[in-house]
Image (cartoon, rainbow, N blue to C red; front, side):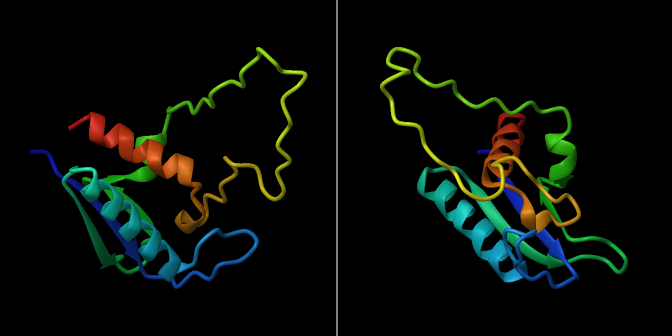
Length: 126
């Protein structure tokens, strides 16, 4: 069976702010939770928490590939709304940052949808 290795390499301690979705500890918990969900779905996955080499930035690797490389060229498309009763359907009001906004300076700021798409892409390539 194929194995997904999700590795979080970090040296710099990041704090959660308006511009960063998760701090370093939050990122560890987030990735660990994703791996737990995959395991409960019978997907062979492992979370590795490790130190980044000196001078290297914090990053997430999936089976040895940087998540930024996996996402490069990937087009994220949201499902379209049901147009049958478009005038009658209530509109959802969303506050805060747009879903796909990502401060690429911090891997800890990656949106959930991008993380899951990267994992899906890596898994499909096994």
